[in-house]
Length: 353
Image (cartoon, rainbow, N blue to C red):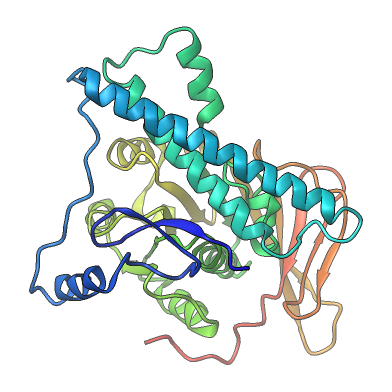
């Protein structure tokens, strides 16, 4: 039995149901119209705008949002029960039973939608009181990265949407390799759009790393930037869920810049990559990753990247995982956690073009 999921059409922005997780449009007409948009023959349909905070919601708008909120809560309960039943049925076999990732991601997207409805409902006058405060905290969605069956992002834990992550390490310690791997994995699992901003120094390596393994390029944008203004201009070109900045020191990027971006893009999660941690960014980061290199115990591989992971979203792991195919390992004791990834797997590949 195929699993049905709800997605948003990338042309008309309406929700539709499908069993194909890669489907982007609700019908052939929207797919053709989207193709015309890309060639300049048709204007894109703008995303529906949220009600202005300065304008109180009408009675009809409030009733509509309450109905949408009620429907979302009912769908969430159904999905939570499905996941619970699946966990109970597979207890003692494998936590990652078939279809669990898809259900967990669908649940997260519904929680995200519910939060959007509640934000619109409570921000009509900009004032939260009583139960509204508790529900706003309760409804804020959390990325279920710790629960997904992929070692590259399992280490990121349960960060709230949106979040800030840092990737810090010496030159040659694998910061960009790790960041590209995380970016690729988020795109594959969440079917989300990501913008990877790179400076002149790291451009060649980053393109090589992306070209070394498959990635859905329709969800990935790479921008060679010279300034923060270039980053802002690139973000305005599409609706990105994740932003990778490699490296933040090249753009003198700090927490004030993040605050400014959040004002325009309140759901944007940001990965800040640098040799030295910028103090103001690290103070607001949910996940902190520190990379270094050590000799690899397997013959034929001279070195491997290591990363220490810490942060308020990162729970302690209680087990070891080893993946022969990816040459990756997670071994954790007390925080910070440690993950290894094969730093040599990208050698021998040409530049992506």
